[in-house]
Length: 386
Ligand SMILES: [Mg+2]
Image (cartoon, rainbow, N blue to C red; front, side, top):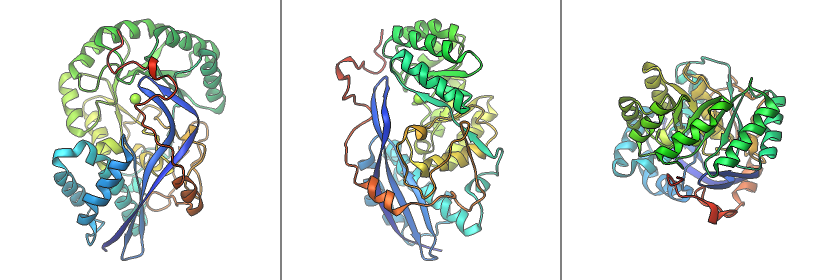
């Protein structure tokens, strides 16, 4: 089998409400959707997400496509390795493009072999994948109402963005706990916004609300600072922005920076690399949750295949999917009681809806997640809250 062409689509799906976090406000889920065609008539679906979709799309079309046309799509490890070598000096961005391409190659391989992608990654450790209800920085009573709605829908874990204002964070935690009680697990994500002393002070203040773990309290590069925070508090620490590659994970293990790794297919550079991180974490007695860049149904399902194939995703995972107004699939993913059930269809087990693809290709709003059109003046700088 040979790859004959790669077709890409820029899509943007609006969220049902703005998602405000410590470094900006997200209004939509943008992605670059790939269709990798073969001479056997099989088309593989992939999705690139990340911090700059136009640049990632350009890496796919201007850099990588020339190496992929004519290649055997079943040689996934060899092709990924060659793309990684090609992108050696810019792998942090290249990884987002490689992730979408490898996703499509695995979809082709699964369709060719008649097997779901999770079978290619080790087989299913679980038949359904759990997601955390997702809350953002907002009015405390509004978030308490949303937390209760998640509980009533059957979600067992909730994740909440924090890190702009300690009083608002504490008021929100108090309102949420008063609404849902303590039988639902609740974690918070500061997205790098705290300095080391601030992180220690704020996490200690939040401890009475029984926090499952705190995600990325300090900037991504400060692995020793994260370790210092971890030693000073009684709440587990998760690395998210720091958990950008297999190599970074090895550094964090050596420095004892964290307890939990928030793994991304996009940042790791593919499903296989994300799966490798889960195995390394497992071998070191650490645990994983899947992170989110606000993927559409394509990459959300790809992530679900990775989660299902490992016994080490012990927490409910992150997704913006429940906040997206629609999707580009013929059958949008169903989250029931906080879970997506995997099918035994070959490949990723999903199909694009051409009409919806057309609709969301025309959604042209430009935004960056590191930007706040709503409260720009109040937005603190990363790692600067004192
Ligand atoms: Mg995070």
